[in-house]
Image (cartoon, rainbow, N blue to C red):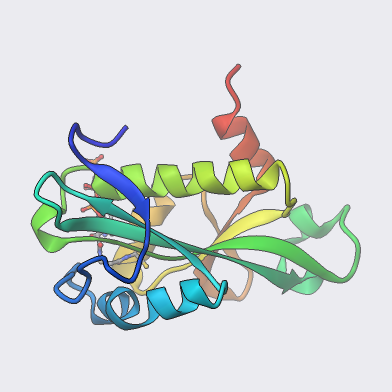
Length: 170
Ligand SMILES: CC(C)(COP(=O)(O)OP(=O)(O)OC[C@H]1O[C@@H](n2cnc3c(N)ncnc32)[C@H](O)[C@@H]1OP(=O)(O)O)[C@@H](O)C(=O)NCCC(=O)NCCS
């Protein structure tokens, strides 16, 4: 999993997040100024990865949401009811610039998908969706099995069945 000495924790107000820098201002701003408030209001769940020195190496935020039946690709929507459908959204993910290129982004993404899969055993959803902040982020995610939602080039999805197949031991 994560490198020895690193630890993943639920975000707390006491965590030192004001200096976090992943090189993208919107992502930084989320962790520095909004993530705790949203977590305390139970709107989102953020997990923070600490390095051996206690610095924030990276983080991710998950939220639950709904998408309209018509927003899903037909092959996914075909057998589903024509109404708002439950989804999980990987809303934010960032790795500190000084830690980039050490596979932490991949490890955090894998852990966030594991969290979704485990939550899905209790609260079902039809897909994991993520919003890419830019083309670079999209290229990072597309190395996995995420596909574009029709008409939303920066919104990617992964079907729940695909997620289960990826994470269920054979
Ligand atoms: C995107 C981001 C999370 C990647 O984190 P990272 O820890 O540097 O990535 P990793 O070291 O895990 O990279 C794993 C692989 O992805 C590749 N990769 C990393 N960033 C990539 C990008 N933008 N496009 C394509 N591939 C990318 C790496 O080359 C590596 O490939 P390899 O396995 O063939 O060597 C990080 O650059 C970041 O925080 N960016 C700013 C915030 C952001 O864009 N967040 C995502 C949207 S909210």
